[in-house]
Image (cartoon, rainbow, N blue to C red; front, side):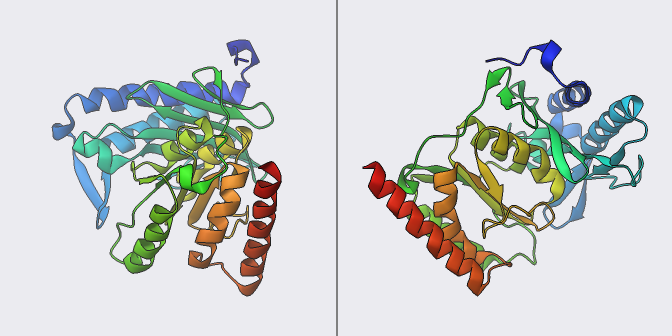
Length: 295
C-alpha cells in the first residue's frame, strides 16, 4: 500500500512542503557547519541561526496556507499565529541541534498538527537521508510512501531500545543511570542517537523496538507519537498513561514490548503511585500469560 499524492490530506501536504523547505536550509548549512553561529540557551542546550531560519520558513509556509491556525514552536513559542485556534501546529525546526553542530548526521524536522487536543497530522523529515515520515490520523504511517508497522518482537531481551541521556545540570543522573542499567541488562542493546522525534519515527518503522526518555517537550514528541500509533504501537508516559504530551516523559513500543517496558520504567516515573504499581503488576501477569499461551 502506498500513499499517492492525490490521497494525501491537504494539511499534511502543506506540512511536507514546509519540512522540505526547512531541509534545504539545514542541508546547505551542513556543508559548512563550522561557520554556523551557535548560542547557548542553558548548559548543553544549544540553538543556532539554522534552527531559527528553519523555524521561520516552516511557520511562514504554514501560516500562508492557514493564517488562522496557532503555532507552538521550540524557538518562538506561541508568539506567531492564533493561540486561541482549535488547530495548533507543533514544531521542532531542528531536533538534534547538538548533533548538527558537530556534523553528526542524525537530526530532523518535526511538524505536527493538533486539532481540538488530538494530533491529526505528522511529518518527521530527515534531511541528511531524505527520509520523509508522514501520517494522517486513521490513514496509517508512511516512510517515503512505504507503509510502516512497528516491530513484531515480543521478548524484551531480543529488542533494540533507544533513549536520550540526561544532559541538563539539574537532571537526576543517578536515577537515570540506574534505569539505563536495568534496561541494558534486559535488552539486546540500548542506543542514544540524539534526536527524539527521529527515534520515535524509527520505532514506527520497526528499525528499533522501543524508546524512552525524560525531559522532553511537546515538539519533541507530537509528530512521532502519531507515527507510532498509526504504525500499530503504543505511546505514553513511564506508567503507561496515554496523557503524556506535556508531562516531560515518553515511552513507545509495540504493545507487547510496551507492557514489558512499563514494568521496568514505571517506578522511575514522577507520576508513579501504588495504583500504577498494581496496574504494572497486572500488565506483566497478563503478558506472561499471553506469552505462555503463544508457546
